[in-house]
Length: 79
Image (tube, rainbow, N blue to C red; front, side, top):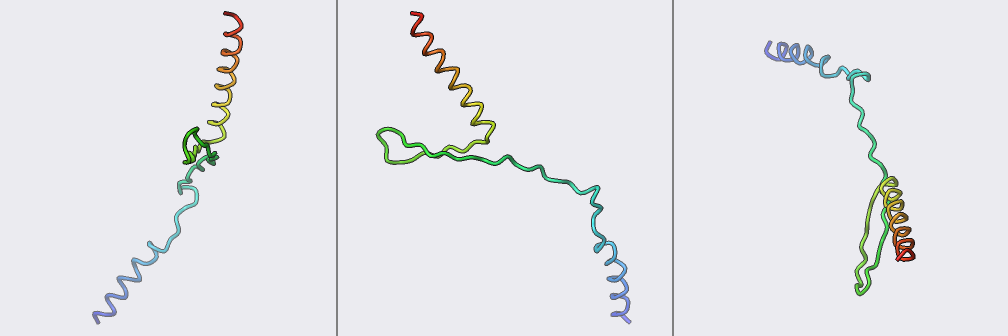
């Protein structure tokens, strides 16, 4: 009799646990941007240094460096 009661209780609870989650309510993880890594060797060191950034971060740094180079080049000629 006890085993019958236990089996009925487990079978009553099983459909709720076995029901899959509604696809509309599941949360979707946002994809992380892909990192691009570059290795650099510092002067006077045998150790390489690795820098990892997203494509957007590399492009932003490139634009900053181009602006700095232009200021140095044109600023020296103006003096």
